Image (cartoon, rainbow, N blue to C red; front, side, top):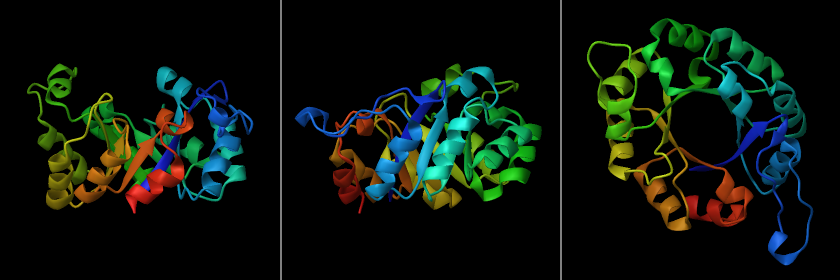
Length: 233
């Protein structure tokens, strides 16, 4: 199972300053995403996740220059999220150096856009979903009948989606849900957020999760990257 560092981008910088060794008063802080990514790759990271925070708000890629700087410093796959919902947006991200993209949950309600995105990105595309029942009940679906989580995942797989990124609003993931997705749909499942300790990493590993996106908990030093990798092994 992969432990994937996640860096939020705003104005070309990381929204969270990374300062390894802060507790001991050693090292140097940095908000440069390329520096942060390089540090984690040096520790063994095999992939980096970048969230274009400005792009998510504007519905188009904004921090592509920062993506390019990261791509120029590390030789591992880069997944980009935020403003990726559109074939041309994905092309721009790929041209900047991204190798994978993550689309927001709303694309599940737009077959035409999703088909165009899958045509460009293929297996390098993932869709983010919040599987909490109340989230699905409250979501402003554009269809006559509110779909269930199982309805949506089956539809997405039918349209060519092979990877899901599940978030739970900071809550814990249900391992049984992950096991069911992997078993019934034969998809890759990545978890975003809700992981605050090494025991949670081990539980998700045992459930068959492909990877975990860790952002603030890594950048703040609450979980050390080598320890997270050991728990995932």
